Image (tube, rainbow, N blue to C red):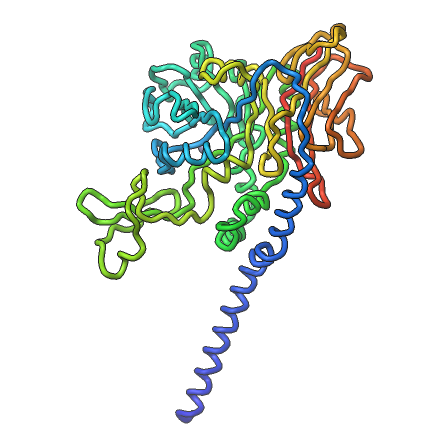
Length: 440
Ligand SMILES: [Zn+2]
C-alpha cells in the first residue's frame, strides 16, 4: 500500500468513527430535545390554562391546612449536603409549612438532638428524624435510638414513647404485620426511578431540560405506584395505616464546590462524593463566585432539587396549629392527602363524611358510624374525576370533571378512599390520593 492510499484509509476510518459518534449523540439526545422544544412547552401551556379553572371551595373544616414534606435528607446524611438555607429557600418558594427530615444516622446509636434541631425556622417547622431499617422514624423527643435492636422492637419502643414510625420504600419487603407502625409511603419519587431499566435517559433529559422544565423531567419519571396502593388498601382492611407521599430528596445528583480551610477548592459530584481538591488558579477562578449562605462557590444543579420536589408530591394536612405535637398528631390520625402539586395547588380540597344532622361527621383518617352518615363528600378547587375506592376496589367513578363529589349509595363497613385525577391536556393524570374514611 502506498502512502497516499494509507492516508485515504485513515480518513475513512475517522469519518466512520465520527459518524457513529454523531448517530450515538442523536439517539441519546433526540428525545430530550424533542421534550425541550415540543412536549414540555406544550404540557406547560396546558397546565397553565388548566390552573385558570380554580374556584374557591366552601370551607368544610374548622382545621387549618398545612403543606408538608416528609422523608428527606440534609447534610447529616452521608449522601446529602443540603443546608438549612437551601431547605428554607425551597420551602418558602413552594409554600411548605413543615419539613420532617429523615437523615441516615451515623452508626447504630442515633442521638437526638443531632443535625438540625427541632423548631421554627423563619416560619417553617422542622423536625429531625431517621431513615433506617426501612423506617421513616421520628422520635419527636430527645433521646437515643439503638438501631442494633430488633427493628420490630425499635418500632414498638418509638411508638410507645410517643414517636412516629412510618414504613419507607414500600416497594421493598417489610413486616406488614408489625402492629406498631402507623403509616407507609404511598408515593416515593425514588421508587419510580428504581423502576426504570436505565438512568441514562433520565440524566440526559435533566441535562437538556433541567434549567427550564425540571418539573416536567420529574413528571416524565412518574408512574402510579399501583402495587403499593393495592397493598395499602389490603392493610387498611385490617387496621388503620396512614398513607403519605415521600419526597425522598437529597439534592445530590449535582456538582458543587466550596473552599476548604487551607484555601483550596473541594469539588463534589454525584451523591456528594468529593471528586477532587484543587488550587484556585488563573484557569478555574472564573467558575467560582463568592460563597453563598451555605458556603458554595459553585453549584450546578443537574438533576434533583428541594425546590422541584417540594412542588412535586406534597402532603396537605388538616391541623389546629403549626407545632410538632399537633402536626404529628394529625399525621398519625391520617387527616391528610397527597397532591401532585405542580399540576395544581390542592389547597381547599377536603374529603369528608356528612352526617345526618348536616354537619361534618369526620374527615379522611376518621372512623364514622354508618348509622350517623348521610354521605361521603368532597370539595375541590379544580375540576377532576373522582374515583371512590372501597377496600381496594373501585366502587364509583365520576364520568367527567367536577368540583364536588358525593356518594350515598349502599354505604357499608370498610375503608373508603378517594383518588382524584385532573385533565390538563388529553389524558387524565393522578392528582390527589386521600387517606381513607373508615365506616363501621
Ligand atoms: Zn431517603
